[in-house]
Length: 477
Ligand SMILES: Cc1ncc(COP(=O)(O)O)c(C=O)c1O
Image (cartoon, rainbow, N blue to C red; front, top):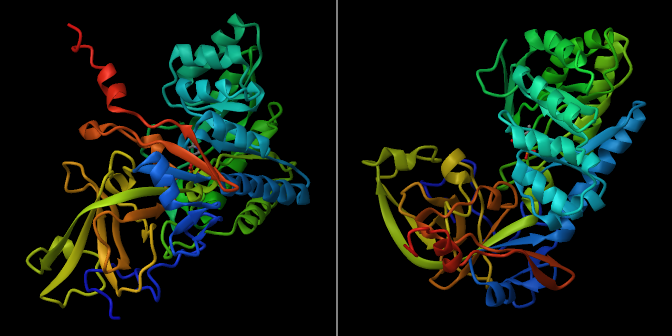
């Protein structure tokens, strides 16, 4: 079958529009004997019968095994270069008490980015010494809570925070370990990175000012300086950006060693995952090997000990574990002409006068996954309740919100007989899906259901209309 001229250049017509490419789908996703999608031994139809749609389905064993693999790879590679690694799970990607337990049981620490995330991790019973707190504008109560709970690290993001954290630590009679977030001037995304003298952004301290700021930290008796921190971006497929950031931080790290201990270096998160078959993230073993080489080479060049490395992956731990299931409502074949050039933007070919784009609308959308609207992120899709032999048709999966940008999947091929009532599965929605969900158009946030060994259980309850109305203070006036 020839491709639809509206299809983006990266999207090939699949030989089989029922296949579940292993790079994109969670480890335990497969077609059942009847042809429907099954995840960890639970069929899509069974999940939908019990929990409805939309629903986020987390393959627990997948999330655990990714967490474990990242930790094992970094442990092994940093042991090889005579050091060790601390892996923090970036809870902003998706945090619930269950997920906090999974990742800590697999040996990870947890990085939180607000008092709310900290509360979830503490409620899960995570040892506070395994928690970190981030944020460019931490409130005084957030700082106080983190210090009094005994979190293992607070990432200082501005000069004013030094005094705020130091005061909280004195008040609680503690010595608070802190890192300093550096704005390294390196910004990376997928295959490219941009390196400037200074990055125009709200996070961190410019590299040039950092030594003076560390001196201020060291002057506070209630603070203990752990080291520098840098996070250069998201959905990164190459290690060059990390190498550039490490290179920039290393000179400073070495200089700081002259004034006292600097046991750690935190290179942040941002490791990319496959949302579509066009995405080719680095294998985690390879990434860990490159990180270890980058850090060991940098240390050797400056004649300093290899620091303990800390990393903060979120997406690469939880993203691939989750599939969102939706129900198809309305389908429209939209004739797209060249008089609408924006529709052909990025398309493989622009020589057709008209072509058909099948708009398949589902019962969720930007309220359960804002990433396509926010970042033009691509996803893929399959029919989940059945397999079909119909020829593939180019589809755009749209949500039900009052926004034309409310798209779930910009482009993929589905069997052309996709019909109202079908269940669709969108893989790799575990990171920044539920975490960024909203109630736009008064849609209730969907439940999060974990599946493992043939059993499904709710790990975050879905909202109801009553939940939404219960916050409306005008009701009882
Ligand atoms: C400071 C910091 N660390 C870690 C992460 C996690 O990034 P990712 O989920 O892409 O691994 C982020 C994401 O925004 C971040 O800002």
